[in-house]
Amino acid sequence: MIAVAQYDAYENPTLAQREAFPYLVVVQSDQLDQFSTRLVMPLARFKTAPATPRRLAQSVELRGERLFLAAHLCAALPSRVLRRPVASLRSEATAIVDALDAVVSGV
Image (tube, rainbow, N blue to C red):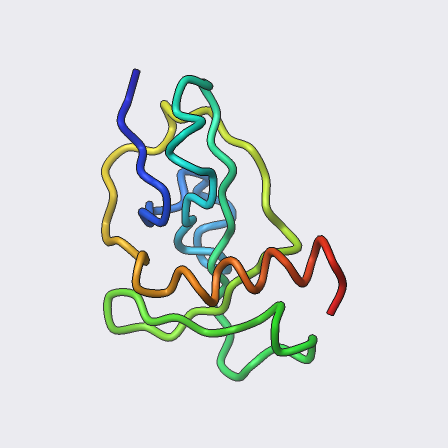
C-alpha cells in the first residue's frame, strides 16, 4: 500500500484539469489508510478570490502560488494515482477543515 498522508499535496494526475486545478490535497484521515482510495480536495487557480462564501474559498500558498481551496469539489481517488507529494499543507489544516465543514454544515 502506498503511504499517502493527510494534508500532503500532489500534482493533479488529470492533465486536462491541471491548468485550473494544479494540485490536490489529501483530506482523508491517516487512520483510514487501509482503504485503497483517498479523499482529496482540489486547489484552484484564480487571479482573484472566487465569488463564493469565504469559508469555501480560503487561500493557501503552495510553491509560491496563491491557490484556493475547492472543498465543494472533493472526490475520492485511487491512492495509486497520487505519485509523490510536492508539499505538506499541515500548517493549513484549520483552513482545510473549515472549508470542509462549510460544505457539510453550511456556510
